[in-house]
Amino acid sequence: MIITTLLSLGVVCQATAPDETTPRWYRGNTHTHTLWSDGDASPDHVVKWYAENGYQFLVLSDHNVMQQGERWFPVAEDGRLTPGQLDALVTEFGADSVETREEGGLTELRLRTLEELQERFDQPDRFMLIPGEEVTDRFRLAEVHINALNVIETVAPQHGDSVQATIQNNLDAIAAHGRTHDRSVLAHLNHPNFRTSLGVNNLAEMRGEHFFEVYNGHRSVDNEGAVADHSTESLWDQALVLRLHEGAGDGELLYGLATDDAHDHYEVDAVSVPGRGWIMVRSESLQADAIIDAMKRGDFYASSGVTLNEISSDERVLRITIDAQPGITYTTEFIGVGESETGIRPTAEVLQVTTENPASYTFTGDELYVRARITSSRAHPRPYAEGDWEQAWTQPVRPMVATTPQTSPPRSGP
Ligand SMILES: [Zn+2]
Ligand SMILES: [Zn+2]
Figure 1 (cartoon, rainbow, N blue to C red):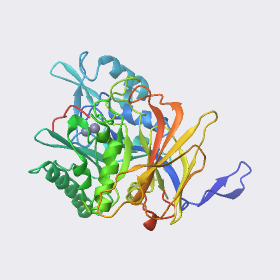
Figure 2 (cartoon, rainbow, N blue to C red; figure 1 turned 180 degrees about the horizontal axis):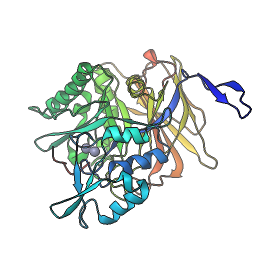
Figure 3 (cartoon, rainbow, N blue to C red; figure 1 turned 180 degrees about the vertical axis):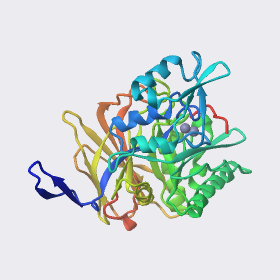
């Protein structure tokens, strides 16, 4: 791309900017709530935090609703929007930007629509709002929450006659929305351990779309699992084995995201705050369809604080270059399935541990898949749980097919 700059002398000169087609990493969060559902802050307050804290994209994913149409929210001392917060909004955005009315003796705030928010906050190659929704469904006691990214109107929960049918019907409806509207959309299955709702087979059997939250920052979602083999990471590995070794689901890789699922936007140490988990996507541009397409290729990783400069793999080696910070050490664990005896279902294990940077793993060629978890020696500043370290999780790769580089009313709850 050529930028034209007008100098003070009136001379027009041309400077070369970084090539537009060179992919770069974009940081984003795909799961956050506002007053449009059960979050505790107006959408402009929420978006401003992300825009000012090093994110390039954000999905407001309210429960079964998009930020569309006219919506008024009551101000009440004991409510989710207090008079003090309303005053703070006026200070933050100016009186002209805070629209209120008196209704039935109450002051009400008009919630900004996605379109208005995009107009205010979107900046080319700096920040972008991607439309979205948390399609919030359930089967009996099982919570089935699926984030739909880049949809343009609400996708209604589809229900089903089993947990798996409920998942699949929603995945299918989101994919159909993409086809109908001719746009790239993506669905990710959220917090599998929330209320012990989902199990390994649910992840293994997903068809057509294959993304889930390996890390969700909401403290009620039980990422670690009631027992060790029910942690989200263990579910990931077990589901990968079922998908790749036994052909469960559509046999595709399963990709992991980290998200905030933030509802609490006014406290730093609350149940679900912004800034706990995010994804880094390597894309040729900051356009919604480019970000979605890069994720579909697996060209992204999940992070709760560790930044990577490069992830590459070929038929021989998986190599990860960490953006190391002074005084911090990084431990990279390569996790996967090595050789297995015929007929026996293999289990994932840590294949190699290194503190080197770049961290590399040389394939034997027999691996079912390999992924990496990088853990830093720096404590997470906004931890999900006490004692959390900053981490990153790369997507699983198969050595034989490795690419270069790989790179309604509001519901309460996450
Ligand atoms: Zn949820
Ligand atoms: Zn949520």
